[in-house]
Length: 214
Image (cartoon, rainbow, N blue to C red):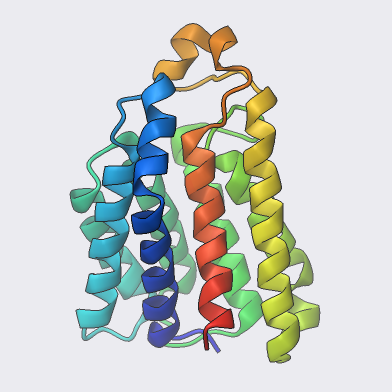
């Protein structure tokens, strides 16, 4: 079952990856962005992890809703806002639940990704974090019911979702940017890995790592 403790474990794992990849994300963002991607993601996920570990709430929806506000304040950037949309979408899906099963958690994650697409008016193929999040979430939802209740199968599925997110991120090299500063020189963005998509890859990698470390 997915509970508050799961959120604590997952965000701590993601935060560790953002810290490790802080300089790498900065270097990717310096190509077509402000160069602050690694800083904002490191700060944002560290604050989110601290919020979950210190909060008294056990309602997953409330935890994520308040966590979204914490994240947005700690990561005042375009991607910070985008990921806050994701947290809010998940919060709505999990409102009133102290625990949910594996398939429900997968569906909540996909609801978060859908909220990002709705609020940011984005879709796959536009060289953004969505290109990693959508295949990762889709892979997770597709296999969640069959894997549910089998710890090894759930762990394998999380690893497969991380691989799907990584492949999606890698595919952004061949795309032209549509959003943000990179869109002003869209042709020059071809051949360059999108930094936001790498953040998406790291999110799914962190989710998978948290299960493997249990």
